[in-house]
Amino acid sequence: MIKVQGLYHSYTHDHVYAVKNANFEIAPGEIFGFLGPSGAGKSTTQGVMTGLLPLQQGVVQVAGYDMRLRQRELFNKIGVSFEQSNVYSKLTALENLEFYGKLFDVPTLDPMQLLHLVGLDGVAKNKAGTFSKGMKHRLTFIRSMLNNPAIWFLDEPTTGLDPAISRKIIEIVKDKNAEGATVFLTTHNMQVADELCHRVAFIIDGEIKLIDSPRNLKLQFGEKIVVVDHRVDDTTKREQFSLVKPDDMARLQTLLQTGKIEMMHTKEATLEEIFIQVTGRGLL
Image (cartoon, rainbow, N blue to C red; front, side):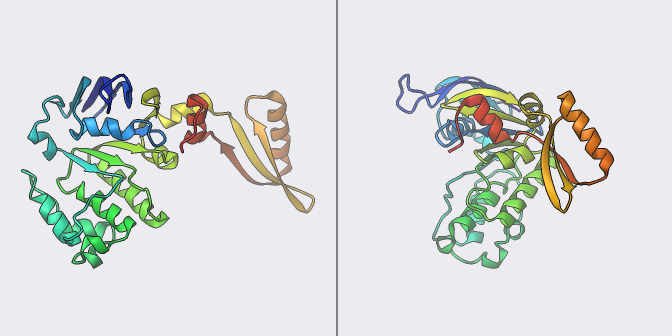
């Protein structure tokens, strides 16, 4: 569905690259996460893949289209939700969607149903210029769904949203993916990536350091540890036990036989911890 080989991009048209030798492929129906801090090259890569930036060096194919040519037909098949909302302030929410829908050569979804999906149906006739940042972000998000895209580019889709709306956005992405949409997700929110993505790529300073599934990364870089809360006299004590060290396993077995365990769960490495371990950098 998406193929990127040897992608380089320089905003200064010299050897200072925002993206350096990026290589990856995305299968149909996959949610692929592009993870890294601000300025890592995530949005630049997405810009080239969506035709917003010219392809300077390398091969980029999206839905079978060569991005050196940027054919109009491609835009009927993709949707793009930007981190920075770019709605028309003097148009209402409904008018924004109706106007945008006229740009496509394919059937589009019902604007009112989309507004209802993210809780904006009650302000459908309000001008977008009166909206909060979060409301504009939601409007930008559903606008990217209008043409029911086969490939969906999402740039920080939950940024600036409250937890309830963020959860709604995540569920919408899951539903569209279940219907067959391929998703390219750029984010520095590792929790969102962990929940949504089939595979992730770690990018730092324009270079991809690693590509794998969240599960494989946790198995490779995480420790096998169990955290146990158990009663000791009238208090609760929390202890960690390694599942690979014989002494810890023997202690855990003894504790299990006492019947005093209140809670027990495995402790796995987070994607953020793994990112720092692999790249030596944080996400901010």
